[in-house]
Length: 97
Image (tube, rainbow, N blue to C red):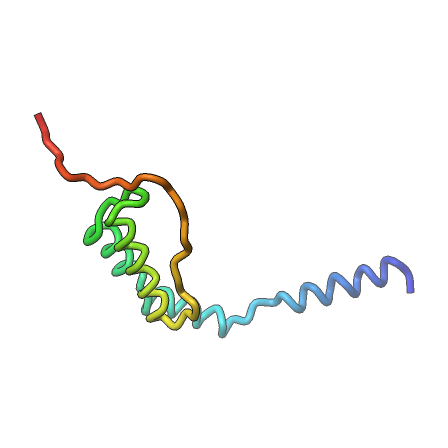
């Protein structure tokens, strides 16, 4: 076999292996458009919990909520990683002049 023949066979094998499965793509599209959980998650993290500075109590609540949510989706071993940041932050008072 020549190099060109081998290259042609290899390329055709790669192309057929990557042919899209239209049924799988349709299922993914349906799941994303009709059963998406993105909006409620986004709303909770941005509106309910609000801004989160690193190492703040709100940051901890958001991380724990996200861990619990991922576990409820069936992810195994959803956990928080220990991370040393230093001093934490929290907004105790805000005034406008």
